[in-house]
Image (tube, rainbow, N blue to C red):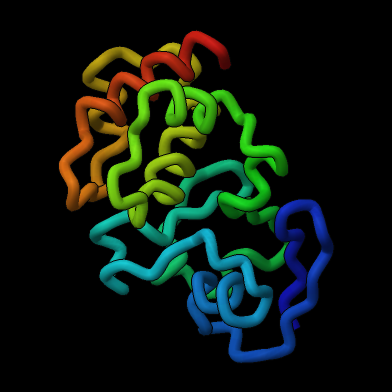
Length: 150
């Protein structure tokens, strides 16, 4: 059995401890804001936080989260008013929107670890999050804006 706190709620998982965390949050808990993209941790659509650090849910087993706190996009801020989410709206970042929950979760983790990142640190911190629509300039601007609020 795996005991994990997800978005502030204590959970117990009795299934296969090797199940990807992504499938647990999406299929078992119905938290579908976290997306399946590539299944190989290359695109970042599945990004969640484990103890505040961004991880790729598609390759992270549920067992990794045992005794830890997991935050999905739904738990970042219940009203959608985390500084990163506000900056995303201010810069009109999403185009198709599919990658955005992963982008937001990576940005929030970056700013949690480094509230005043340099331009190079933003680029490095967001590496591995792919936006098929190419909104990288808006993503960068939104991270820079959110850093001013954190």
